[in-house]
Length: 264
Ligand code: SAH
Image 1 (cartoon, helix red, strand yellow):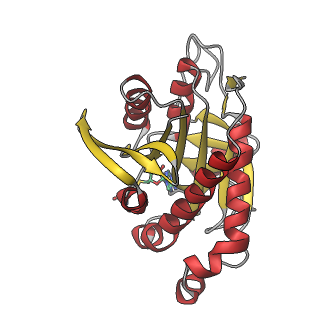
Image 2 (tube, rainbow, N blue to C red; image 1 turned 30 degrees about the vertical axis):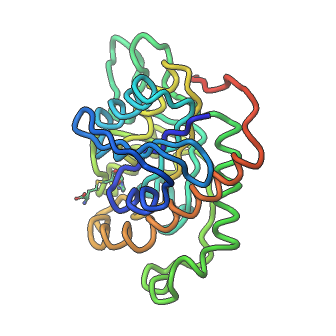
């Protein structure tokens, strides 16, 4: 196994690169790739930057140039439902590109010529990832994030959600827009800007993947304030510790061969 780890924001990646054993750095396509060992897993870390094209380009390069066999994406997202709160974790169960609309030629949300609107992560990886997320909340949270920060960001009993994640080239900070998405996409739990692009690439290349998102905002008018501070002091810690737990788990119990990354 060679695990590609994609982060969307610099703050999330820094800790992983620091933790890497024997990293070698390679610049390709305006991105820095760090190859080495993370908790004894052969891994390549890279910053995708923001948006669907940036993420698709990064995922493709990881597979085609760096030979990764699996991809893990970590990032932040806006809450897609009232039951999902800032500081909660979403492990995606399915992805849709909310800005894909080639109607009337193809149904809304369908990725032309795939016949699919929704793309699913690898079930085994997603189950392992949500296990790592649960363990993080139960065992690491109090130590990883100071009481001041927990109070400041109101992290009271954060939860792990599984569900539909919608991606598009737009930072959603408008309640009406979010409501419209909720109406069109039942089961929505998070909105972000990269996951569905990685999902399509992984589907087309047959590479198992999973996506972890820490909820940073409510995708409404208050989304922007404190965003970067939250990323640095909270989300980066979530991503680091959950990735650490995931790598240790993959080392102890390697994934069984499967080819269940799929679309519907
Ligand atoms: N202010 C930041 C911009 C971050 S863009 C900067 O200057 O760098 C938002 C990033 O977080 C994307 O990677 C996206 O996937 C995720 N995200 C978090 N909240 C989001 C929201 N409400 N809508 C869309 N993407 C969101």
